[in-house]
Amino acid sequence: MRRPSPESLAELVVRAHALCGHTLGEVAAGLGVPVPSVRRSAKGFAGQLLELALGAAADAGDGPDFPALGVELKTIPLGARGQPIESTFVCAVSMAEAGREEWATSRLRRRLAHVLFVPLSSARLGTPGERRIGQARLWQPSPNEEALLRADWEDLMGAIGAGHAEELRAERGAALQVRPKAASARVRTVGIMPDGAGRVAPLGFYLRARFTAQLLAARS
DNA sequence: TCGTGATCATCT
DNA sequence: AGATGATCACGA
Image 1 (cartoon, rainbow, N blue to C red):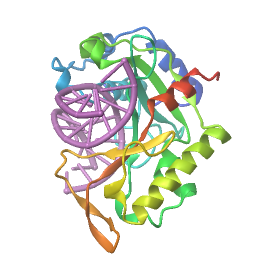
Image 2: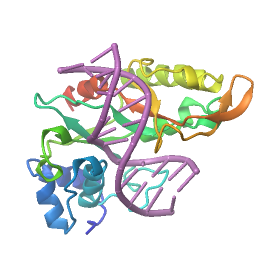
Image 3: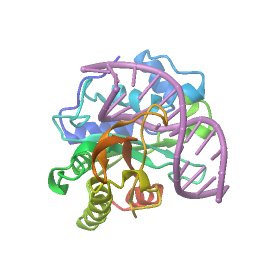
Image 4: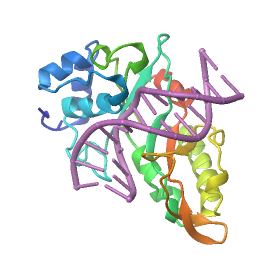
């Protein structure tokens, strides 16, 4: 089912471009993978199918999806007008270590160092199998983009590290935002309260749709 | 249980 | 309509 790993960036891009114009149903059939019939239960299906199709590592774990290339894979749902319509999950916030982590070695910076964005029609426009893949784009943050991400990251992690995670709203941040990221709203994990360690709701970093729209529009 | 893959459901 | 907060599936 899973294709072999690409040996170069060029090979990865060729493979991604070969998928352009095809539906998830077509790709799944080629790999012998069943397509979920219930949309509500199909969250994550697009990303996982493309991992198989492009030969991402089976257990990337904390590392990039393509370890040999240092590249991360992200799918981007597009609305009828071709614009991203959802934010993009990047990684979990290290709730317990928010005060000690540094930008240069941060999980978020590592994950966004080199990304293959694969746009595809939104799940809201059809069944999972009908979703159509678009033109992939390999991206690395420009100095400007990195400065923007860093400023947001330092602001948000600063607040979390100071014990203000519970007061953070999704409105905070220009390119990034933090939002709940858990199986349910009742989940708690070890984090930082104003007076020390405590139990807090886990958060995740997301790229705002208007930020991904800009980077997809920029010329390679 | 947590992190990664995301989208859903609802409120404004 | 767009964004926020909540939720679903899966593997280690």
